[in-house]
Length: 113
Length: 114
Image (cartoon, rainbow over all chains, first blue to last red; front, side):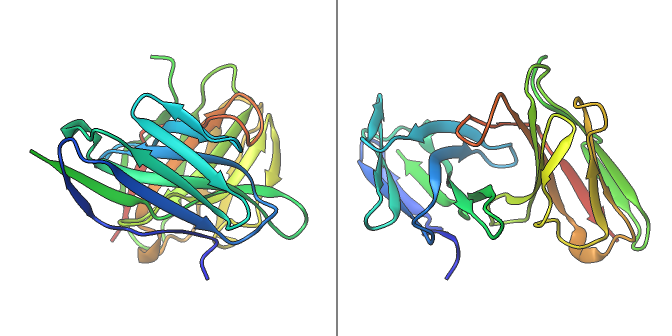
């Protein structure tokens, strides 16, 4: 099992749709969770951090489920400009006790008119 | 521009040659990370520094890979005896503090090994 798993998609949705992505992680001791957005041939950029109590930023809502070891991202009222790859990042504990930032492979979202 | 910068942006080299990439982080950031990204995959962690100290290097892909950050400012990533499988985008990121802090990425160096 991969340490951090995401469905690569693509998720193909019409403008205005609501879409949700999940990201599962393997180690229950993981800390600090994030969603990044990566446009084609560009560097990743932070979309939002994921807090234990869940958090919302405009049309975006992120949640953490520690019991089931996954984080989620919900996008409401999708815009054409939301088309991108969404990467989850989990700080995983590795042997020796260090934490390292571990990215999923990303989920591709395509929003069409 | 006060963002993370990387040089060169593109590098084409022949198999067996050594290459070195440079990363200049955001000036007040004490953490610096190196990643490799291949098509269809997320960034793969390689190593990171806190100031000049390299805190984790177990994920460097082989002993051909090494990184330095001698004065706690810019960093270099060197690949010796390049192989075709080293072809990828090499990304650098910096952050203000520990792993709970947002990372800011540079535009990357695209390496092609022929």
